[in-house]
Amino acid sequence: MEKTIAGQLLDIKAVFLRPEEPFTWASGIKSPIYCDNRLILSAPKAREIVEQAIADTVMKKFPGVQMLMGTSTAGIAHAALAASILGLPMGYVRGEAKSHGRNNRIEGRMEKGTKVVVIEDLISTGGSAIEVVEALREAGAEVLGIVSIFTYGMKKGLQRLAEANVTNWSLSNLDALVEVAVEQGYIAPEWKERILKFRDNPSDESWTNK
Image 1 (cartoon, one colour):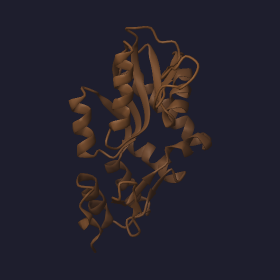
Image 2 (cartoon, helix red, strand yellow):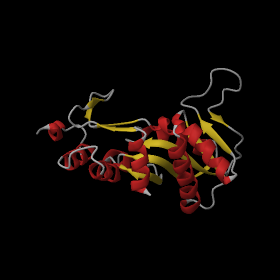
Image 3 (cartoon, helix red, strand yellow):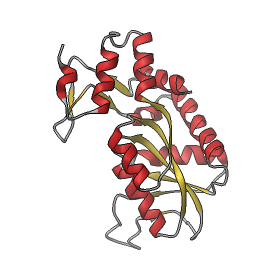
Image 4 (cartoon, one colour):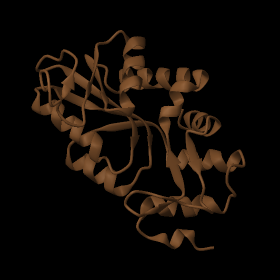
C-alpha cells in the first residue's frame, strides 16, 4: 500500500521532489520535498484509492472506532469521505475556538467517552496533530490514534507523538516515496540517500552538497 499511495501522489503531483533546487520552508530550512495532499481531492482515481485506504486502515488498526475527526483544514474532507465509506459520524477540530456563536473548537456532536480516530493529511513534526488530539481529550473523547496520508518520518515528529502517547498510522512515507520516485525516474538514484539524510537531520544542509 505504501508504494501504491506514493505512486498516486507522484502521478497527480501532490508531492514534489526537487533536490537540485530545494524548497524553503517558513522556518528557513531547505527541503527537497513539498507536499500538497489537498490535490488528492481533485483527482478522482487517486481520491478513491486514498479514501478507501484511509477507511481500511481505520478499521484494521482501530476496530473500536466510533467517530472520525478531521484536522482543520486539510483533514476535514478526507475525514468526511472516509466516514461516509464506513458509515460513521464525523466532525473536525478548528485551529482555535470560534470568536462568535457557540465559540466551538470541536465541530460535530461528540459525546464524552466517544472513541475517536483523527484523520490528518500530513505528519511532519507532529505538532498540529497533537494539538488536535489534546483538544479532543480535553473534551472527553477517547482518542484511539491518528490515520494520516503521508509522513516524513522525522525523528522529532516520532518523538513528539510518542511523548504525547499518540499512535499514528500513515498510508505512505518518505522511504516508500523516494523508492518509487527512483523506480519511475522522478529523481536520479544518487538522490535517494541524500533525501533520507535530510529527513533524519533537516537542519543540516550537507545533503545538498554534490
